[in-house]
Image 1 (cartoon, rainbow, N blue to C red):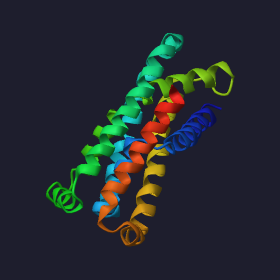
Image 2 (image 1 turned 180 degrees about the vertical axis):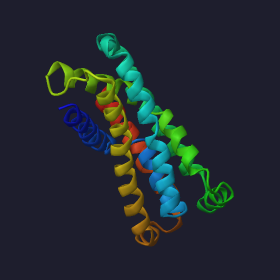
Image 3 (image 1 turned 90 degrees about the vertical axis):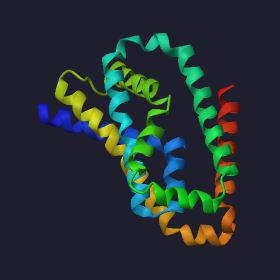
Image 4 (image 1 turned 135 degrees about the horizontal axis):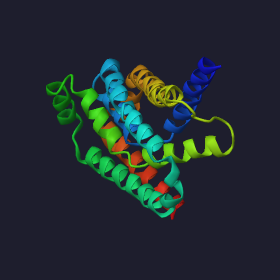
Length: 208
């Protein structure tokens, strides 16, 4: 039974994290940007790095799962902060020349994992998201994390689910890179930046 609960916790986390990561955010756009400017493996490394902070924020959520009710207003502010981060990232891409960005990536080859982790760490919604998910699973008798092993399995599953999504994003973006270049020529940074800013504005309107 204990092994079943561990596997259940892991698979629950993988599924929830995968679906939650579909929402467009800094890591997703960073993975796409890396795939377009470099290659698939670099984008995968970026996505892997961007998935690692899930471990930290989920572990913190387990340690403070009893204070969810205090985070109502704070969580609203975090949503606005996420929109702000996306907006700034979009502006950076718009004002960055495609050629200059490509040379910059060549110089910093191998640092994608650390950049991805940085982007993930600055995703302010991860902590309250897992805080809410854990409380929801407990309160609705979907899963009770009665042992350390189930908590560890769930925490690991959050990173695995996020990475699976980022891996797919990296593969698809790399596979269709030629098509993207053909359609938007050398202005892909500006186009991607404009899309990111649009998403930030939409999120801001929805959260208002």
